[in-house]
Length: 358
Image (cartoon, rainbow, N blue to C red; front, top):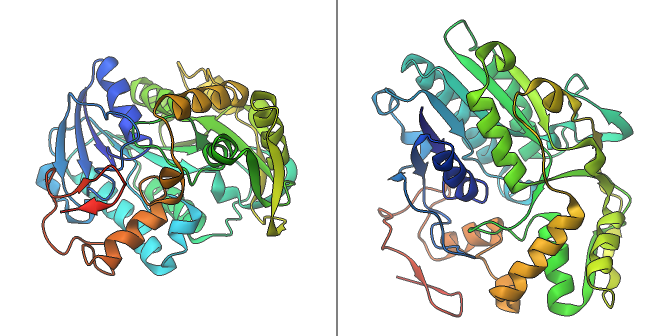
């Protein structure tokens, strides 16, 4: 199977490309290169990488692929709020355009990286894929519109699939510290303090990046009738937690860590508990392996081995919004997040201090 992975140099893509190759797929990556050098570990090799903005893809460049796994996006709430209109144009309009081109190019399967954030303000009740969508951020709204509009393209020859994954965590070659569990563990590791940015009451489901990758592979390999134009919540029902419970897991691994609340910590409108039984029941081969407790141990081990530094935690390498703000401040990307000059593998490198040099 020949598979194109957009956003192949992102947090999920850096894991998924390797897992696809291991699963016997012929993989090509497409990535704009914003996070090319934001490396926590040695990134994977073994696939062809096309340096390109997804907004510039032409239909003839998609001919010959059996499937597209679409990860490329402005990928979390703070980043989406940088420019809500741009988030809608890039995430929603950019994805819809790419899906239309894929259909024209006779790509049979188009798998979208969606998000449980589309449920938004949902409260304490357990909700499934049929729940009302109530996103409260630009990122969540863009994902809800993608699910709605790309689904209209489905026909006997074109199969969209929507994987609404829970909040991701876990070690990746291109780590993110703007994800709640990764960030809380980093804070405890570096300072002995688990810094809570909310009051700890919101519910949030969590899923390891490896299990997200398992879901994409399952959606690629599944018979068409099992996944055609279907949305699947990706995670485990048992892995819904209030944010305060995540702090408890971390204290089990770092007993001396203390829990501190930011001065403006309060309730978070994003509160949702998600039922993941449909994927476990209807997505052939999908079987989540990770738990938050195990993920905390993995993160701590990785932070000790590298080791993670205070510069890592506060700098732009592992925080998406800070990285794009850095590139903008240096004049390397414009207001539309396009490179002001061609980006190549050799164009940007990081010094040991984490500062970008050219």
